[in-house]
Length: 512
Image (cartoon, rainbow, N blue to C red):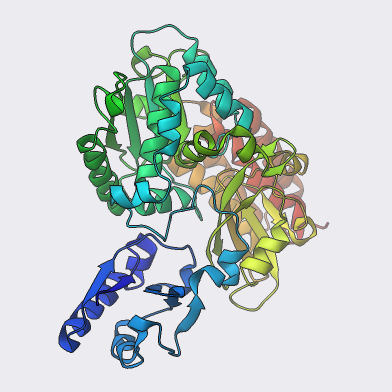
């Protein structure tokens, strides 16, 4: 009898030895004459347990972790291919508390299927959304997305349906769909996990978007630092073409949609949609003035939908289950689920997908397990390197776009980075200015010059020089950056700087 085993092919798992573990399992099985079918699945998102090895049994999949090559022989000794007991045994995967408490919609298949097996994708409800969309009018597809309440998961939180509707109603012989896969925020990895763990869901979402607005060409703008995602995407795209899910006539419908991957060159600013389009056109990644909006005049001057990975990967379930189904998750104007990434000084870093509305405290302690050092968590940065630093007094804020805006913070891409009480917030504020200075495209003066002056000011403040003059000057500079920058890179750098100054003045040598 052939035993089915799973070892993740996710970058995080590979970095922790998953490839070596997979090879060791195959070698040991061969030595013992045991026939195994080893599937490289996506990661379940419990990174502290990687490499996580799973075994199919009559009771369900049983997990073992974290497995190292030195553990493989003893696992076989314990008859783990039949679910045997071992020190690394975690029980049934689906019963693990970390997973059991989640509401996985976008991540429903990740960790379960072979990412590049089209048959496996279809067997797990894949392409049902596209099949439904092929039998709907364009306006009805857009309406379903609008009714779902889906907002951009890349950070801006703009209603996806409004963007699609604008492109649909803008006449043009050529329209485009762009997936912004230039995931560059610190502490974020949900886009990567989707592309490595379930690339077909992104392909399906982009195909539905193309049908909805009348776009026949799509591009995935992928950051060059994601080689495993690149391989998975190109493999999946080739298989989608071969099976008729992409091409001149999608599933024989007579409607065309073509898709290809383009690699970015490592510029953070190209995560901004207009810089991204400049890069796609073969130009230097500089921010464009708006208007015109990309939805009206975007890539090569044509109407263009630009959404990020999670936004587009959320579309198939909306077209499968209906807009109302998706909208029933969440709170207020923040509907559906958000894949939240836990990173930094936490015991249990990983991916958590839940409906909007839970608090930071629940995330940090119920899922993250508190700080890895055992010290108090001093601050949390949400929304990437340009997100605000939140003190413990704000940990009970619901994860919701409007609730965060009310405390001058952003949900952004859903990245959560924790710091314990040894963190120097003035040094972190200086890093924010340095980051902006390094990544600025240079087009606008507030960002180009202001970030460099900000670094100099922070050096003076950290050195304790003339605080009565330099702290107000820092606030004034941040006001210029906030209100005068052309894009969010300069416009949001004040968020981490001022939040650190306001909530942790003692780290700046200032009295509260």
